[in-house]
Image (tube, rainbow, N blue to C red; front, side, top):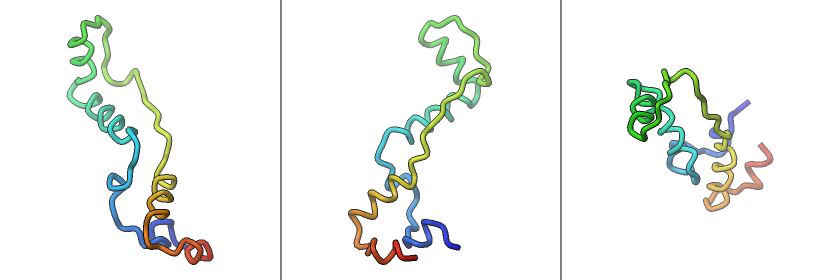
Length: 85
């Protein structure tokens, strides 16, 4: 059994087809978790809360297949042929 990337002959990285702000939000979240950045951010905006980076979370919709499908619509891939696989 092949995965969707193999079936569609898609080798590019996700960032090349990502069409929404989720990627930037995920990068921001990652940055906040490093080097006590979350606390530094709170200090910067004048918030007196304490944050060790473990007491918050962000959840993102998994959108790879949706973004991949949109990319397929604009490519030269014969989607009817691929649907038969």
